Length: 141
Image (tube, rainbow, N blue to C red; front, side, top):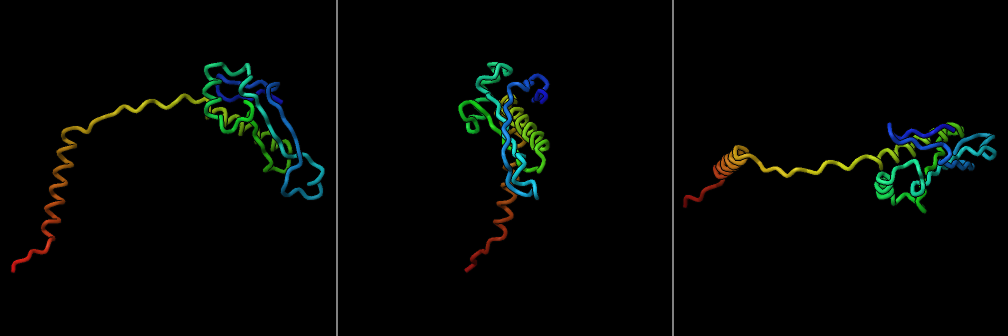
């Protein structure tokens, strides 16, 4: 098993990944009850030396709902072949870690509408009000 490249700077060594295989549900024909094609890929985020401490805090916070004891587990069982499920699990784990490692979005800078924009808005309001005023029925009794 090769190292898992998450980003250009973050690479998870294969030794830190733990794979477990079990029987998968779904189609499989004669080999359905004998092939362990379901893959559980686990990675200990909390104790991994390959994630820098400043990044580990961010990843732990963003993946807190998916972690059990600091370990992130991804399951793949959509393919009939174990090799395909292993590749799918690795891709899924890399995508989760990539999304969790992204820097936070830039803060929103509050802006005010320009004077011209305010004037255009008010002029349009006056124009609409005049249009609606012209549609009203008048009582000339």
